[in-house]
Amino acid sequence: MNTSTCSCSYAVVGPRLLRHPRQSKDRTAVNAAFNARNLTICSAVVPRHHTAHPSPRVDLACDRYLKTAQKSRSVLRPCASSSSSSPQPEPSSYSPPDPSASPSVPWTPEDLERMVQEEQANEEQALGATWRQFFTEDPEELFEYADRDYAFHTNTLSMMSSLNESQSEAVLFDPRRPLSIPSSVASEINGMGCWRLANSVDAAIQFLVTRIEGSWRELLKSDLNLYPPIEWKAHGWDWCDSMDPGMELEGFADVDVPNPKPGEEGFPRLLLENRIYCSKVFRKLHIEVAIRQDGLQVLHVVLYPRYKYDLPILAMDLVIAKDRVSLVVVDACPISKNKTLPPHYMQTMHELQELFLTNASNQRKIPEWGKAIFSPLCVCMTPKDGEELAGVMKYMVALHRAHLMLTYLIQPVDESTRRGALKAAELLEGHKRFVEKQLENKKTSRVLETAFGEAWTTAYMQEVMFDFKPDSEPPFVDASIFQLYDYYDDYPELGGLAEEFVGLRDSVDKERAEEYLNELLITASEPGNPFNPSSSSSERPSGSGNLPASSGESQEEEEEERPAPLSSAEVAARIRAEWAMTKMYETDLQFKASVDAVIPEAWQLLVDGTLGTVLVDYLKGAIGEDSVEEAQDSRDS
Image (cartoon, rainbow, N blue to C red):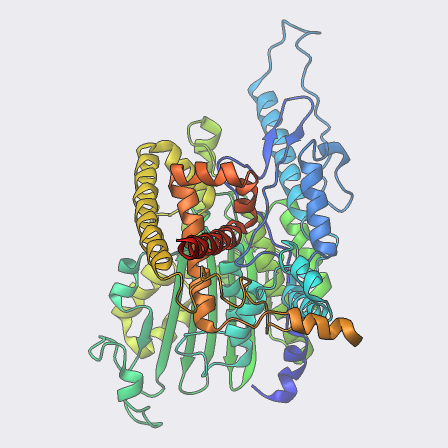
């Protein structure tokens, strides 16, 4: 890509979004309880948020999120008094008959249908109001999250360097300021990681792949699973080379077979690389990168929700030809029967387009097959310059992250009810419509058929790109800590196995501790033994072993009283001795009773982590006294 065309985009492309909660069975993100006359969210408990690393800063975004969570723990907000920025449904002019006033007049099916529609509208409004609170006040953070994380992390490290030791420890153990690299920054550093095409694709595709795949790992952390390899890797669809479509060279044709020259058979060579994941809400998270020898490059991303979740299909495509972005398509494709998106989703898309797209009217004509599946706010454009490209890339990242955040609040439809069964059938039909219309895109099939042949293309498009298999969704493995608790509740016998394992481990540790202490006591008179009464120091060194300098005579006195530093062997022996004494206290009841009788505060010392040090010093002193008594007895005799 020409630098003059895209320099602006890479100057402003860079990142953070607030971390969001993982939904679990025990701590429901939104628990809506509605009645026919006063529809309100009665409880919305938002669980503690987490990421690949804990949130790296306490900033306005986190404060805003915490305030939202605090409000949600009581009554979030009546639907009638929702924020003015949230989408408001049209006021209904229909009033169902009052059965108390006219008991002889039953409600008609039309009355019940209108009531159900009103209930659905209020449910959507409540869900949208909760979702939009995550980013309404600062929507730019949906894109700038990584830059803000990096700045906060850098400031924290700079602050640490200016603090003394005690202040540094206070910051180090402050859970609000973890020193680990934020997950968003780690993704930026890692880039495309081990993608084989990482160094071959345009910088725009590199950036988008980094942000999209990084967001999956960050926001879907415990939910993210690899798509079953037997469905795609076993067929060789993770890496496809038009010079070796049958995988005869086991995926290494790009190394062993040189690129054909123009006019030769196989030109232009086409390489495809795929990553496919799944989660609790998404049956397939597909990201494909394609590069052709003549300069064509394609990024294709589709987020398919599971068939029971009422969530749009987010689709994003970016095409580069002759070092220039020739096409960008971004849309949340509706799967409802009326082919419309919920008001809160439409409002969010509109606001993000107003924020990031400099020329929202710069739209290309939607193809006929696309008109049947795209929403009215579909972005289909050719960026004219770097500024427009930067804007549409920001929009892609922001909409994608907002879309992922919505998954924390939604639940699958309940097919046990008539209403739920009808909705499930409607969603299934929407998925089928999306897949069938995408398969009508002749431009995609033509490129693939030229490189791989018709049979291969049909199988690839129907199995990898646009599959419809309602009877064989990929399994989901819930790796969250909440699921682990539930698993132990369902299988209490595992608790017995855990106790047995801990008991075996403690018995082994106790045996090791006894052997090591016996060895130390036998050789207590040898140099370097931590129990040797004549050893130079009973204190473990900290840092370099140097104390703060003082002036005058006090400094000279401190230097005279200061014990000689321990050698590395003495430090190792000291550490092992402290571990052994602590382990004996934890595993030997008789030893614990003896220690408690002499040191009443032993348990608190164990909690503080200093019991081993105290016991080693105590035993060392006892050995010294015994040695003096033995010397006196021998002299008297």
